Length: 81
Image (cartoon, rainbow, N blue to C red; front, side, top):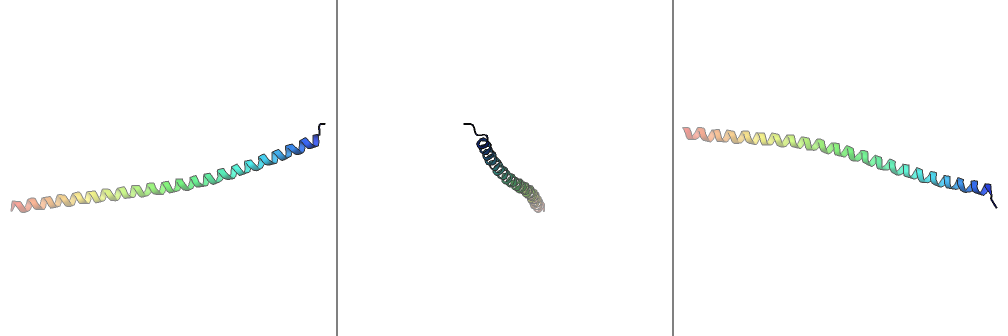
């Protein structure tokens, strides 16, 4: 026989189980989103560090080039005397 109460009870249980599964997925997505935000922040900080290191490297290269040029000028001035 058809029991509407049993059917309603079964549907309520299925709805409850689906709702709990949905909430678990939402929690999982929230955790993943937080990790992604953290990774994006870390990537931004690393990009800033890389840019700063490049600027430092360029200053060092420029300084070395100036030093070498001064040394070469000094040598040529010394050989002229």
